[in-house]
Length: 438
Image (cartoon, rainbow, N blue to C red):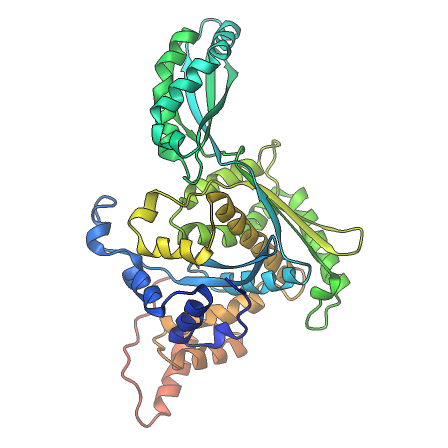
C-alpha cells in the first residue's frame, strides 16, 4: 500500500473503483471480482458451514480510505449495510491525517480459559493448592494444544478467583498468536478441568473461554489541530469544544454512552466482518469492558490537548484472528485480510480500532454541528430510491430530488421515478415493487 488517499473514489463507477483499488493493492481487478462473487461464499459451501441453509446473504463490501496508522497507510475493508458509515469513517480518517494519523498499540494476543468449580469445601485451601500446581497445570495446558506451542503460543499464567459460596473460577491465560483463539482456549479449559477439580476438592462446572478478553486490549490515540476541524462556516475551536462536550455527555449518562459506543462499533464491526472474524464476540467484549467500573461508560473519550488540539483516546478488548475460522472457506474474508495488508492479528485489531475511533469522531462532529441526519439522509436517499424501483442512473436522480425537498420516503421516490420515466422517450423497463408494510 503506497497511499490510502484516493480522491474522488466515490464518484467512480463500480468497475472503475475495482480497477483503482486493484492498482493500489497490487492485485488484478479480476481477483477482486472473483473473490466477491456470490458474496464470497458459494451456496454449496455455505450448506456445509452451518445448519438448515437455504442460500447465502450478501452485503456490500467497501473500502475505508485515508487511514494512516503508526505512519503507514491502510485501506480498511468494511462489510456493512448502513448508509454513511464508510463515507463517515473515510472522511474522519482524512481529518485525523492532518494531525499525523492514528497512533495504536496492542497487547499480546492472550485469551482467558475459564474453569468453573462449585462445592469447594475450603476455598482458601483450594486456591493455594491450585497455585502451587501452577507449573504442572500450564504444562498440561500446553500438551493439549501442541500446534499452538509450535507457533510460539501456549499457556502463560493462571489465576484463581473466589466467587463465594463454595465457587471458584480458574483462569488460564493463553497466548493464541494470530488466531482469535476460541477453539484453542476451550480445548485448554477442558484439558485442565478434572485435575483442577481434584486439587480443589470440588465439582467441575463450565469450561469455556471468556469473551471479556481484557488481556488483549488495543489502545488508539489521535490529536487533530483545530484547523483540521473547521468546515462549512464552523470554526475549528468551536467544533473541538462541542465534540469535547459531547464526549462528556457520554461519560455522565449511560443512555448516551450506549449510542456513543454504537458509533464506535459502526467502524469496528464492518472490519471484523470483512475479515471473517466473530463480531458478536467483539461486541460482547467491548460492552462488558465499557461497564467494568460498575457503570456503563464510553470507550472513546475526547479532550482539548495542551496545545489546543482535539485529542481522542480509546481502549477496548479486541480479539481478532488472521488464521483459521471463516478465513479457510470464505473468499471474501480472505480478500478482506489481503486488503487490510496486516502482518498479524494484533495489527488487524489496531486497524479495526482506528476505524472505530474515526467513526466516533465523524458521528460526534455531525451531532455537535449540523445534526446527524443531514449527511446520513443524503446517502439513505439512495436506498429509498432503489426500494422505489429506481435502477442505474435513475437512482442518483431520484435520490437527489427526494433529499432536496426533505421527503426521503418510498412514496415520494415513486412519484419522482414515475415522472422521470414518463419524461423519457424510451424508458428503461422496470418493475416497481410494492411498498412493504410498516
